[in-house]
Image (tube, rainbow, N blue to C red; front, side, top):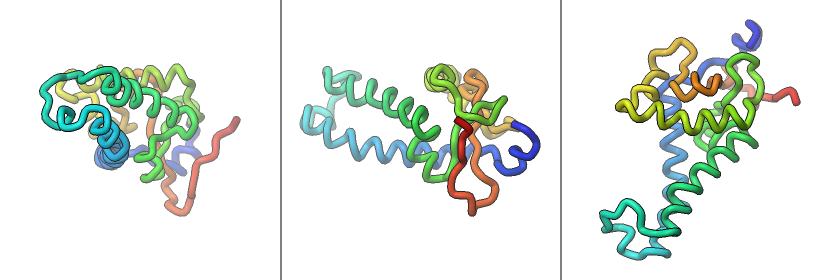
Length: 156
């Protein structure tokens, strides 16, 4: 990003991103929770099994991957990030990341989470507010500094 673009946007910090994640989690629970109950009844609520069956794998493991990556591809943000007016951009150009970058970013969450969540907490210490998943995918999360700006436009 050039200097003018940097002055128009701010890097989104740790707590704002935690808030966006909580919004995404609540939305996901509202959609998936009832479906899981339909498929598994009380077993869903009281089971100690890691996987209850095919529907469980599809709803709790495959659906989140597909939904998050599709939101990133089409909106450059999940609903939680949209709620805080944040988007994911390429760290070098400030433009929309490639699908490959989004895939690296998603699976980079594993790298960020495994060492006690240190890679996620890194957002709080990094000058560009990048977690390890952002650094791996060469992305940053930004939002307009002027709250009057409704959305960020991409060059196509």
